[in-house]
Length: 141
Image 1 (cartoon, rainbow, N blue to C red):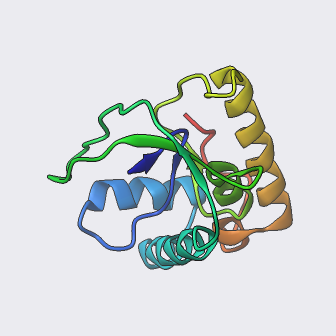
Image 2 (image 1 turned 90 degrees about the horizontal axis):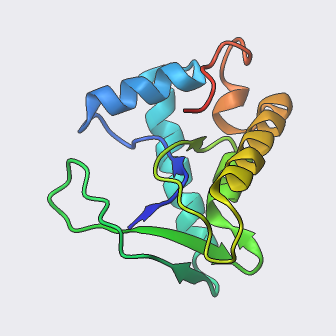
């Protein structure tokens, strides 16, 4: 499955163009991007060891993978997984953006993610702590 609203770093160079885009976005090297991708993967594994809720619309999220995937929202208690990843500097706001199952508009959620990203940059969280100049990364698309 893939998360709505965010893109976490790749863990390898299987999709080099994607990894390169992520490196440019955060202003870090490919190796740093892939290391953060592994950190994001472990964070998600640890976070999802406890109870969580998945909401999906069964929207196909195939990408280049041959695996069948779907977009989803994940709540861990009252925390949205996409928000946690952005707050930790381990994902960028990006991707498919529908209105949320709780009725919140997509634009409002995206604004919240951008605020969380700005805060992560200010704190130097995750990949933002590696970037030599935290102000040079592109704005979220």
